[in-house]
Structure formats: structure tokens, C-alpha cells
Length: 287
Image 1: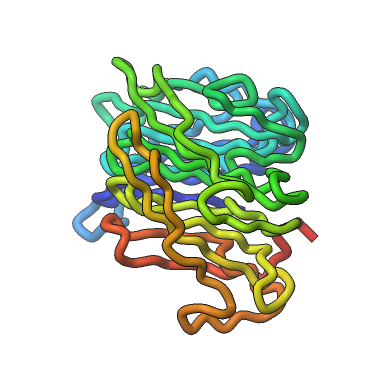
Image 2: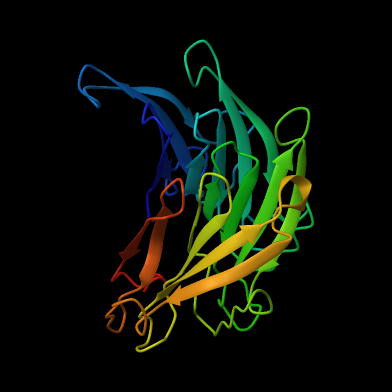
């Protein structure tokens, strides 16, 4: 599935292509574009392609780099998910963080850090698919990462990791604030819920939406979306995480059927007051 992310003013675009074959089969890639013109979109220019041969990316077959992408509001920071990365375990997953600059946007792209099984207190297992989804807040100081294959609570129940990002150089310090899974913040997950398939943070990071397209409320694989409020600031961000509501077949006029996969994609407005949810009838298991 293709992933996309726009900067706040719409002048910069990141597009993930997780099946790209540069270097190896399905290693993946991310394309960066500038958008302008008298009418928005009348000029679209490719700034750079991030793949196995660029910006210190060393990819293997089936890494699926570009599974998810998220730009900060000004487009100077980028998170990229590679859910098939094999650091530590097969398909454990990883997330790459980049700074983007240059006289023309995209002229310089620098890898700040790679979050995988060996970094920032991430302990990943086979098939966790860490990096299935990513979301940066507006200034890039907060990051949500979905791991839809996490097995806390059951096979492929899913999880979401929350991080604070800082340092003299952005990304030089990355600290795991909390892991949301079957045992945290009133989340009650079952096998094949795929919680974390999609994530979206508000601009200040105080609101979070998480998709669980395999949730069985009402019908098998009908899907659900969880909404959270996140408290704390600075280094103590996410010291409190409170589930506000679960949107599923029984809530908020949502009428779902079997295999709707509601929550396959989610997006919050900057202030967190508005939410868009996609349902996808394609089987999230790849069937």
C-alpha cells in the first residue's frame, strides 16, 4: 500500500513505494516532491528518491522501506517505516528518521537515526511489523509508531510505541515514552486486531488516533479506531495516556460489516477536533 504525507502548507510531499526494487526485490523507496505553481499542483518537481543507494540507507530484500511516511509541519523532518526490516528478527520492522534541507528543499537529506530492535528500548519480535504506520507531530518532537504484528495479547493483536525526539541535532536523542498494547491504557486487544495499522497525532501531540482494522466488534474484521488523549510535556510527554473512546460497530453511528477493515487509515486535524477514517475491503492479512 502506498503512503503519503504533506507538509502543513502543502508545498512538500513524501510518497512511499514499499515495493520498489532498487538494490533488491521489494526493498522499497520514498520519493520527495515540491509542489507549487499559480494553481497549487500545476508544478510538481521530484526533489530526491530515497532508496538503497541514497542518504545512508542500507536496505535488504523485502524491507518494504516506505511502508509509512510522515513529514513534520515545515517538511524539515521525515519519518519512514520499513515494516519488513530484519534487524533482530525476521520482519521485526524499523523506522528511519531524516532531516531535510538544502537551498532547494531535498538537496540535503541526512539520516538522523534508525529505530529497530537494537535502539531506544525497542524490543521487537518476528513479524512485529514495527513501522507499519508512523506519525510525527508538527515540530517533530513526538513520534507514534504502529507495530500491527505485535503479539501482546494475541498473535497480530498489535501495538503503538510513543517516542520523544530531541538532542542538539534532531534525532540524537530518542526516548520511548510508552508502549500501548493489550496491557496499557484500557486497551483490550484480541488476536488479529492489527492495532497500530494506522496512527495519527495532532499538531501538539496531545491527541492520538489508532486504527485496528481487524477488530471483531460486531463482525469479523469489521475494524475499529481508538482515540486517546496524551498528557505531559517535554521529556515527560505521554506520562499519562487515556483512552477517550473506541469507535467500532456499536458507537457514533458507525455501521460496519464483516471484512470492512475500518481503521485501515486514520488522519487527525491539527487541533485534533476532526478525524477521517478509511475502511479497506482488502484483507489486511494480505489474502
